[in-house]
Figure 1 (cartoon, one colour):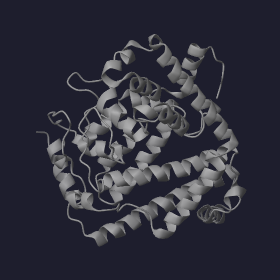
Figure 2: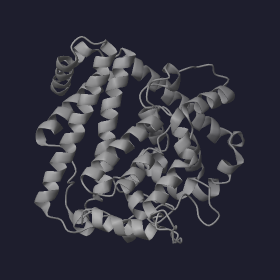
Figure 3: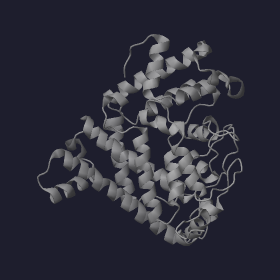
Figure 4: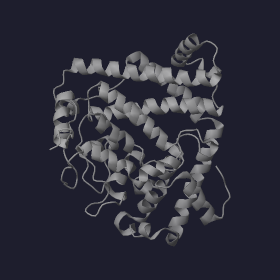
Length: 386
């Protein structure tokens, strides 16, 4: 064997030495739904990451809404850029805390695969449309995608990811029927799953704020009442002096994100040290999460999220687009149910297996914003734009 080449077994041994005792180790994974032989050079979680990145659902995230619809501007975040930002924060936090960053990355890359077109407005619409058939939740849908809806392999449905990645995707647990065995229910998920959950929140809080300022729906003056923003902006202005407004805005976001991530690492590190955990099992048995902010920063972050809810997510322009989006998905759902022949054959073929409503819901949930608008135009001869 070439000594310059590191095999999977060598990498797994290195993980055991490098990671904390309460981190999930690749070699100790609980496995996959369908057993597979291991790869010579990639660990189980590296393979999960790669399968997710190569999936159709991952590629479609590029044209799914974060806050602003795709045609409103090229520089606003979409679900794909959000996913990438969240994954990088998760990697940073996981590495600092000596937990498995590749597992955290895999969970982060998959966590929004189940999001509908048009963001949370689309999710609310499908939840109502499927109310009699179990409802809709994007975490649940993400697990459906990786366990059932992706068709890439001859020997199994879905991507056949590890139990640990699937646990992190599911996030809240479930009490509904699922086409594959569910990850074991425990009081708490792995630290890697907890890390990804909070990193997701850090990512969208900061980039939604940035996009809101870019759009003009938010202004720097409006944010002066938010303590954590005010402190970040003041430190930037003192450091830069007279600088272009766009630089001040960008650097304030950088300072704010660094403040949140640093506090997350340090506060979580203190909790882990106090807990004295020696195994993943002890993490899962904990009644509450260990990954989180200090009390003061948690309060500051909540204030910032409340500001965004009031001034951005509830802005009339955003709500107007949301209402139109919900109307489009409702129209599509009813049109497909009324005339199933307008659906692709592979969707109709799943009626007997999944039920008509769920199969139609799966199809609509997988659409990009622009495909949903195109289908609405095709089926209803509509020229409505978001």
